Length: 349
Image (cartoon, rainbow, N blue to C red):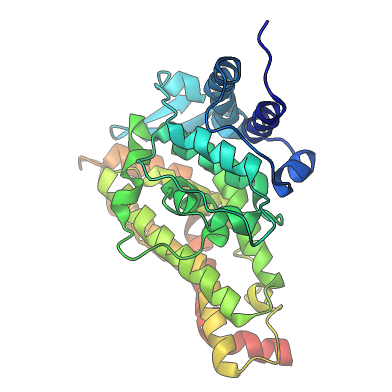
């Protein structure tokens, strides 16, 4: 029976933690330690890795939301069921980018400045995007997060940008709706499966803003959010898949009723009024994105019974009813408050 080397065992352990939604603590030492990794995996290790990725990524999709009975728009009609009932099994192809990423994660001490960069230059497949997204999930909010977020491979992933704008920062010049086109193939299977996970991610990001003290950090986060959401929503509109923006409303149901001050209460009082005002406006990036959904919601209400898009419009009105006009109104009020100096008057009073 063929065995694997210690370095291959470490790589496979990390891969399992990534696709099985493992805890960061279980692989922290592995990620923070420098070790030698062979340039090529042995036959046994490669076989195990292929099997692990093929099965693990599919299971990750199911666990992160694919198991839920959901309704989505397919060709303008509502379709209901669990992920595997709405879609045929997609062909998942993992490129060498996944192996190279695992080799880099296993070999480099991610918490240190002397780490070597991850040098991978090749187009990402849909399976690669999913794998990188799960990598970000493992390290987000940990000492290893900044090292991963600084790598071009992760920064070029549209799915990672959608789920982890706080980790990856502002997109490069030229980033636009076309970046999300690959995620809309196979009727948006991946984005459908990750709706609940994305909602949790964006809720966590918005709640974290109250702990941001430096105005520059808030501006950087808001700029990243605004650029990503603008491109994403444009892509959804072009693809006639407005339903895939639902996670933004799910994240917001418990947020828009809170005072605007909660978004900026952690900003340093030592910062200049101008810096705090810029940070306050940046804090409302997600709220501003909801204005586009509010316009869509108004359009849906205006569709008449005999119009071609009536079924799709009624479907979306039903799906978004829990947020509804009241939610959009509250979101607009909170965004206006953050764009003014009102929050600081409230904080200082």
